Length: 372
Ligand SMILES: Nc1ncnc2c1ncn2[C@@H]1O[C@H](COP(=O)(O)OP(=O)(O)O)[C@@H](O)[C@H]1O
Ligand SMILES: [Mg+2]
Image (cartoon, rainbow, N blue to C red; front, side, top):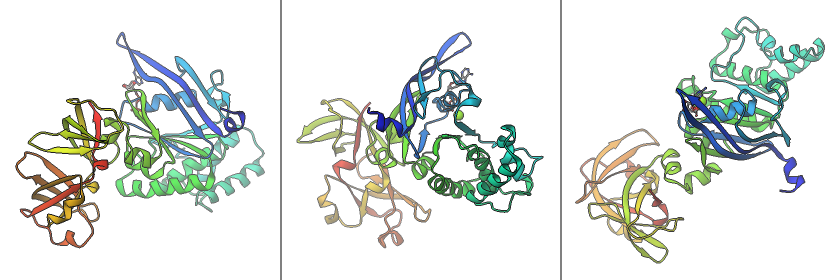
């Protein structure tokens, strides 16, 4: 990579590995991980609990040393730089605000420790509280704030030190659902306005999809896929990513035939699905198949399904009404298969009832097929 493009990379992780020894056994928590995050990006690291996210973040912050590899922030290796000398700040789930101090004192804390001039500190605190949407809150006590406001104070307290990277470890985890939904949008907006590079850790795929420019999906200490939310959702490159990101019907089967650029995949009960796969599959190879509920079209009439590579019919077993996220469960005729189908918003949604016969259409490109 050329020097000019290197300048725009705020974080580079190069082949980083961390092993723990636990009860005499060696366990690889982070396994040869590499990642580059451009300046100003909202980057999420998404993965199930225990996959190594916090370990990776703590290595970026300097609290844990990697066994191998290098971590560069703003083009400078951090390997011999102490945590308090790194241009990073970390926000934890519990926020760690000082309850006995006012909002202003909390936000000023880092600057006080740096012995900056009092008048400068006051000015910076005022600016920063304005930027996070809390103007005039300086004299409030922490316990007078809502959960969302506390979050903003924690961010203000970090950003006032002007870090190159803000590291966030599941910061919304302790909030109730409604506030979490709200904070997702707020955090994304705040990051876009402020422009600081965010490294955001979460096990919640919806958080990652909504907020990120760029996501690394982590599984067992490795990145399974790096890409935009759209890449991960529409073009998952592994069964793990397909099942972890977004809602799905998961089926298993094997390739029975290759026809042109399509594969026929036998998923049992006499059902063969046509799929387009980015993998080079061989005949009789075991396959995991994923169908997104919103990629299955549903109709009362058979003619409707004639343009689809995959056509099925069945009976509505159940309808789970959840407004715009409603789901229809369809038992496929003559098989033991049941598929979740997203309720379309076409007017049909108003009148479908359990027990009705319906026809389903799925295009080959929407049948995601991966070798097991
Ligand atoms: N200090 C430690 N000693 C031994 N094992 C650890 C230690 N810290 C974490 N682990 C293990 O490493 C794995 C990754 O942990 P962590 O990075 O906290 O994952 P995540 O944040 O994705 O939930 C887990 O299996 C965890 O049990
Ligand atoms: Mg963690």
